Amino acid sequence: MAAVNMNCRLFLDKSAELCARVKAMKLHYTPHQRDYTVLATSVVIEAFLNKASRDFFSHQIRPIHVYVENGVLWHFMADEDLQGAAQGWVKTHGTLAKLKQQKKQHDALLRSYNIFVQQEHADPKAAILQLHEYFHDALPFLVACIEVPEFVSDQVTPAVLKLFLQGRAQGADFYRVGIDLQKRLLRQIEKSEKLAIEVLEYLLLSEFTEYLNSGKLPSIKRLRNRRKRFVLKQGKNVYAYSNSASALKRFGLSLPKATKGLLKGNVAFPGKVKGKVRLIQKIADATKLRQGEILVTSMTDPRYIPAMKRAGAIVTDEGGVTSHASIVARELKVPCVIGTKFATSSLQSGDLVEVDANQGIVRRLGA
Image 1: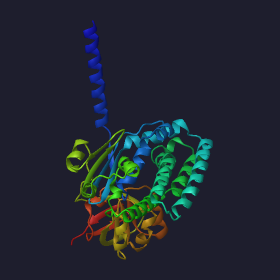
Image 2: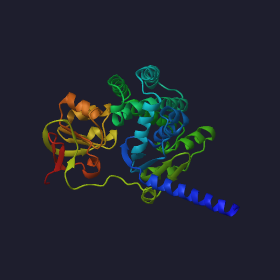
Image 3: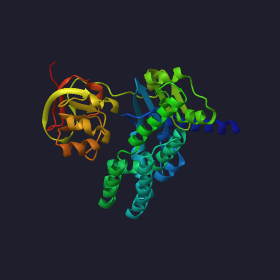
Image 4: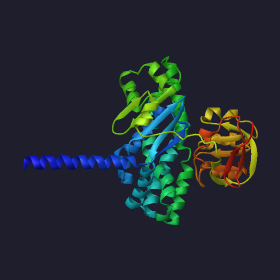
């Protein structure tokens, strides 16, 4: 009888494992290209996965993957997790009174943060640790502001939705400002400790903590190689791979594939413009955009505004009607197509295109 019970238990365990694998296979992981450092990304992911976020959303985020190639970073999150977090907020909180209380606390945090990021920091290591605390504390509310309108807007009242959109606008540049500051602080450390430039930003959070505690770093060669090609899977444990092609395949992930056909998206501001593409994947390259060129990027933020003012049209991979690109395009009256998914993977700087923002279409033209 004991043997039978053991066999049944093994069968049930195997069945549960198989069901879990099947369920995991059905998850849809979307790549999001971001101008983030590996260190900042590792910190933010840890904040997604910690107990504070789980309690706030009543939802446990699955492991998040990061891919870097030639200094350009993508992260992969399961769409189901973002939707689950949004639904979890509604279930756990979901009232105007609760939201007002959370927003009041978050507004106080933003005021403190805005003062902090404008200060001079004589101790860059201490400043980075403080910055990481802000990242952790702000994340749950900022995620709710973004994902509740995106996934469950029909499940909240207009007053709740309005407050979330206000919170989203107020925090739109929170992480980008912080990541820019983090980069400057890391440059200070590299200069003062005579380290190679632009290597500390490729540390994982655990490695940065070890560096602060003991002064030990991974080899400079390894950190430089991460800029060329690097895959990270971050969950309860951290796994790093240098062979990105095999690692992406192993995780069942892939980058958006280039398409030769029409690119289709949503209209943010109408108009029809022909021009040459300027592909911007890192904010440092935004100064290369010339007057009248077509700005093609994953998504915009306030740092892109000078380039957006010069653009003949704007095309993004991501974004909705409340995204930064949409709002600024309407203010500037620049034709804009958002949410194409494949623009940055399909177009290169110098390509001649027609942006038909009346129809939400981008088509290539002859050389």
